[in-house]
Length: 464
Ligand code: GAL
Image 1 (spheres, rainbow, N blue to C red):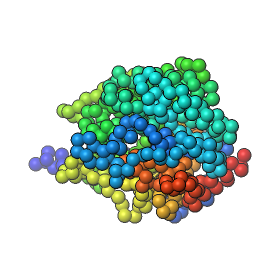
Image 2: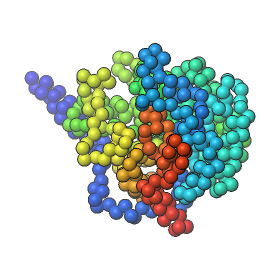
Image 3: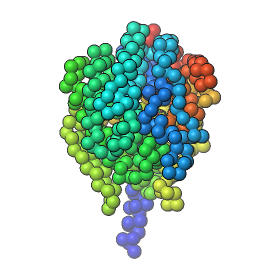
């Protein structure tokens, strides 16, 4: 009896208490915080970001294929069966869009190269596409905007998808060859290179929730794809750093940190679930980049282990994407054994998450373990009514500023996104843009809420 009581006390009282103290969900009293005090070092990098598939238009890749719907069931994969189609026509309109970038005062632009346009068939490169990005780079530089390239931002050619994409470690060589090719083309003018955008998102959305291509639901593949994407990053880093201009290049992975917090801080089940999800989604990648060791163990079910000591020296900076966190409640009746919960006092964005600016501070703390400079490569809000954009920007920038004051090495911030665009499984419904886009006539307009961003940059730059 005593043993049963002790075990009960250990599992249901002591463990949750230990976790509660060890993993606090930071909350600040925003009423007492003066958001007008936001101030950044004068060397701080201010930028904005897009990704090829979301803005360019006319992409033929794994995503455009996925947009056609589920081949077997005929179910749509994208909200209301939307397709990316012409998107923002950024492929043709980029000279004018560069003016828009200039007008908001940022001096850096992060964009991705559309691998499927540059290498539509395996080993066959399209010179027009290569020239297109070359011209984009030249025009950016001539306007005083520094280009920041992402090599893989969720999309790849259909031929690559057909051979199993990142399900097979062998396939990494194809992305490596592509990276080598484009680094050769552009590294005389481009210093900043992001390798892979959000490996954990590609793996979990593509292979666990099935919301991204290839729409599979297989936990083993989720872990394998994550491992292969991380490995691809390391190989790309080592390759391009050994090439001409490699020394001068700044190369880093881009990782989204999304903390899972327990809905009930007293529940050991909520805790165990959140600790597991945090490990798979966040910690396993950071640990790999710190120690060279990747391990995921699901007791009695799955064991993925991988080692590459080169990983410990495979980043000149860490690209941190941060939006929000998730509250998780264990639910035995749910197919994934959990549900997402939201506090009514928290402000919802149009995406299924709330404003949680303290989280960017937590994320910065976490990735600081790697002891390399951090660039916030994405942060922004979907807000079609433009009611909370200004608040969101101010709070997340305040939290970023506080992290710098507290000694964390954050050197830049890119707002997601320059334009409203194709928000993956949500289609065009999510309005992340500093500029709204009317997709009937492609007219762009700076949102009122975005003025806050413009003013903060201006204020900080005028101090120079
Ligand atoms: C990120 C992704 C971006 C954009 C953003 C907003 O995960 O890298 O492409 O979609 O989320 O949800």
